[in-house]
Image (spheres, rainbow, N blue to C red):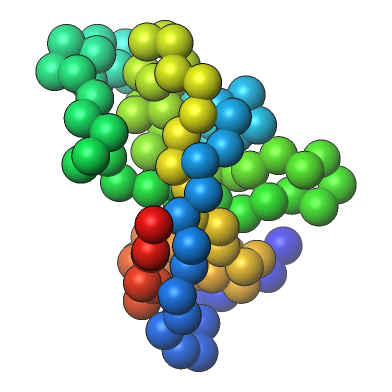
Length: 109
């Protein structure tokens, strides 16, 4: 895997997509139950919910998220069928995953 620590070249516009939650892969193996319960207790406001940055694995067709594992776990437990994602290129995904930095994306509905 290419561990990229320099940001992708330029800002781009990404269209938000609502995809079935069963097509989104939770990658964090250390889900904190307390954090998930707190999100469930607080509730999820779909108008304020941030998109999950995700890359679509071409082999499986599933979305791999870089952030929001606890929010997605809470959404699944609450019975949501779809979640908003911003589909990244592989270069953008690797940059976020390995550098823990944001990239300059404009997400539009």
